[in-house]
Image: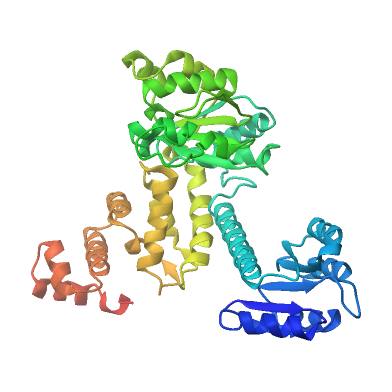
Length: 448
């Protein structure tokens, strides 16, 4: 139940509001400013209703104090009709709204609901922004390789410009991360970053999704809808997998890039836009041009500054820093005892080619955290099978046959959580022989 504090020196007003609001909110009452501040500190209300005239301190001064100490709490001012100018001043200081006395209780309740809804929406947006910042380390993306350092240097160089940028590289390599990095380093950082995932949009919806539409533009268009360009405003439009855009939309996108204006579906009026365009693709667009799937003029318009991100297998130096980053990342999200990965496990990460790049690495670590939350150190045998296959081949053959056999048996036992029947099946032997080998090599004492 949301908490409301009413600060008003008129007892009749306080009681009237208490009775009207008590069934839906937890109501606190105060007859003066100092008492009101004390209640705020103790109860941390979700919203405050504040009269402009109080016996010990005027409402404007109290509002300033509240906004200085408790800026996250919305304040609705109560004012007489003759004090509307003062109420407008209060809005400039930070009041969310004002209601004139004598007020209509239904109008006040609607104002309270609207204000609380706005507060919760702002909190939700701030939470999402914080999650994005955590997901994408935008101060400086995780990298130590010279290849990625050069990518970041180029991204920083173009961030102060409005030049279109085309980011290329295989799927999962971090193209959106670099696009967000450019946006965050630019003067547009306080404006929206609007991603458009072209591969996920049905062909028939591309135009309305990007440019928006007017009411009645097509069947079931019962109201107008803003397109991504309008939502971006003076921010950044990020076209992910731009090679998936249909040819007919490519023509309209080219015109927008050249003229910086567009018209929504069903409208003849042109709307100007200041949005910056950053694109990304895992396709070879020059090959797509030869096939007739992508316009050459659009390609050159988008790729004024090309940035190529190499695959993870070509920058092995970045793997362990990424592993360490995602260990910290998932420790905050998933309740677990995991502290680190063993050297053997990290070696397996280094020896794997990562066809899915950084996205695959992140997903693998998340899977490990989910399935091994009770362990403190992740060992080689805790890793997914695709990582261990490479490690199986790297067992040193110069060791004696017996040492090699011992390692294989121990590996099979750990793989099966020391289930001898399953281990024997993997080793293509009998359970009796396996028991003999366990005793011979003293493996029972190694059981964890």
